[in-house]
Each structure stands twice: as C-alpha cells, then as structure tokens.
Picture 1 (tube, rainbow, N blue to C red):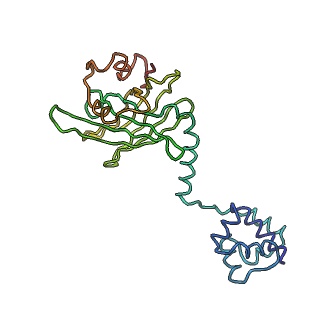
Picture 2: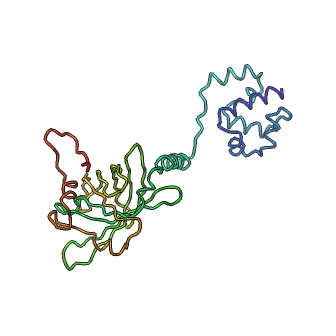
Picture 3: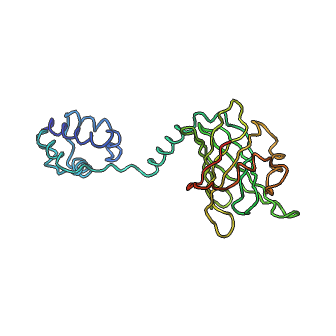
Length: 271
C-alpha cells in the first residue's frame, strides 16, 4: 500500500509544476513530504485529507494500485494550476525587458523631440528627452516646457517611460507623472549611420485639451549628445510656429502630417 500511495502521489505532483510548490500550498515541510514520496511512511488521516482535497481525488482512490490510479487520473480533466496575477505580469514584463534592451546602448543621451502639438493645432512642440540605462533596461524622461502666450508662466510636464529595441525598431512607452492621466507611445526608425543625428517615426497619444482626442503625429528626435546642459536645453523647448527659422526645412518636412494620394495608412517619414 505504501508503494502504491507513493507512486500515485508522485504522479499527482507531476501535474503541479514542482514539489516545492505543492509543499508550500499544502503546508507540509519538504523532508516529511519526501518520506511520503519515498514510500517509507503513510500520512496521518488529517494530512491525507488535505492532500486529497488539494489534488482533487478521494482518499480511497489515492490508495489504489498505481496502474489503476493512473488510468483514473488520465480520464479526469487536470486541475488548473493558478499562478498569481502579479507573478504572471512580472514574468511577461521581465521577458519584454530582457528581449528589448540589447542594441539601445548607442542611443543613450539627450534629444529634442519635435512634432505637431496635439493640444495646440498648427504649432510644433519641442520637448527634451533623456535616455539612460538603469537596472538592466533603458529608461527615459521626457520634459515639456510650454508657454502658450508671451509673458505667461511656463507650464512644465514630465513623462517617464521605457524603451525597447525589437526587430530594427525603437518602441517607447511613457506616462505623464503629474496626474497619471496620459500614456503615449512612439515608434522610431533606428539610425543606420555610424553617427546618430536624427530619428524619425510616429507618436500616438491623447490631446491635452478638454476633448482628450486620440491623435497620431509624425515625430523627429534630434540627437544632442550624451552630456548637455539640461537647463539650457529645456529653455529651448516649447511651441514653435512652423515657419520659425530655428526649425530647418528637413525637420519641418519630416513632421508634416500629410497623406499622399492613394495612401490608406498614415505612415512615418524616413529621412
């Protein structure tokens, strides 16, 4: 009987991931459980009940001959092993973090981000972005400095996000830290040159105006360098008119949100 019980217990454990997890959930210490698995001891009636409740079998069934018990278990639907949601999410995020960090080291540093503002139609918004490496991943901070009208106090917004490099594209996801009411996504072409100058792509977000309209815009990242004066760089951020001489013709063309005749998709510009 001891041998049948031990074999049946080992079979049940094979469906549950690991013996350590079974011991933890049933609240039996591992040395004691090993004695049951080795056929040296039978559990007390109380522990036998706990084991049977955990595996979803009856007490008389777990004591059946091993061949008969295996047939019985195969005919029943296997109990689903529930993994805590936090554990599932952590595993997915860790995988994404691991697969998306390689190749981004060369993009560390400061950039000006330029695109047509979603909240101020017809004006180009420039923000300051800094990419840095931390805890095995590439993270970034995007800082806004807006002066809607001359003489008014500047509005400052900060976004924090994570960058991934997948299949020759740079994926960015960030959130607005002050209110937590906005998430934006950006996909950029990488630089295929030895020296990084500009990155282009598309940005998806929500207008900061009252209508909160989802919008998509072409975007240009101008590389500033690995070390700059952040205060001075931030002073150059804000809203620009499209014909402002501080914006060169190539940048203006790259952020223009037009659709060519016959196009059915809004595509990024590549320069």
